[in-house]
Length: 369
Image 1 (cartoon, rainbow, N blue to C red):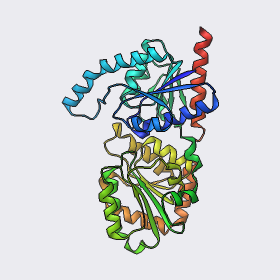
Image 2: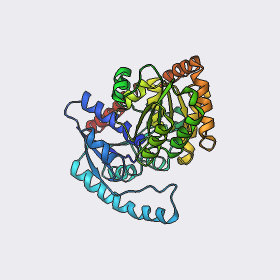
Image 3: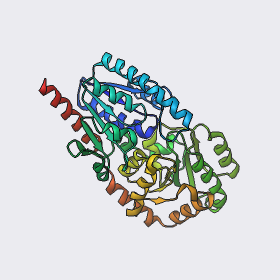
Image 4: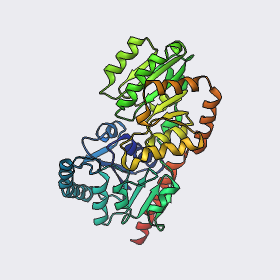
């Protein structure tokens, strides 16, 4: 069986695809997986490291760009479809699975035109433009949230949850302390802004150290900054004398989650799926420019039920962040309650649900032949 997984651009789109790929290889012997993405996306770096092959097309997003960049991106669409069609005719997959991101559209459209079975996954409550369009002709639409089902035909939409890599659920706290050179006796805050970092969060966390001087010997911080802010953030921690580890990126997210008593992060769909699957307490800072404001919508779902705290990006600074960190440090029961509610929302079986849909689609098409 051959499966193509299309999409990426960010870790939020890519990692659910990797979760499905790994589980397919594990549970269905002889399965061949090929990813299709762009050479500029995170998939170019991550997919080979995860042991999978990847082919590239030239594709760019259309939403949230300047007029001229939008025109340039639109011009590339026919080329992306042509390249996608060529790759699919070469591979001859049994199905194509779209995980979102701007490279997903041309591949799924090409698969449809070639008569290849197709399935897409919508991670957010409000579907993006690409998936709204793809939903009109793909064979199966999988969604994370029940609210998303209303945007697609009831005949082919299924709720699965958001696939989480199996290794995320197998983090080890003691190993994490060693991996990241942390002290097992300190309250640990894990800060990250997604696979590329988030400058607003990096700046606010750095500034918060000014207000957290009294906690210098009580807390430590594991901070994934992204490449751009790495040197400046590391310098700030060193100047203030706070304990912890500053890194541009980590592949050891499972152990990073495991050592964390509190997490500060953006609110992408995959991040929330991982947080809830692990049952972690978090301060969420939604990215304000996400399409359809989906990160704030994602975060509010957790905030409303007590699974997380939230600070809007426009309200985030060193003082507001430090105040919330201070409050939660002094209220361990509040953190415990957030962890309990978070864990109750997690869907660790989402990957299995997705694979069942993919396999049902493949078998259905084969039975017709």
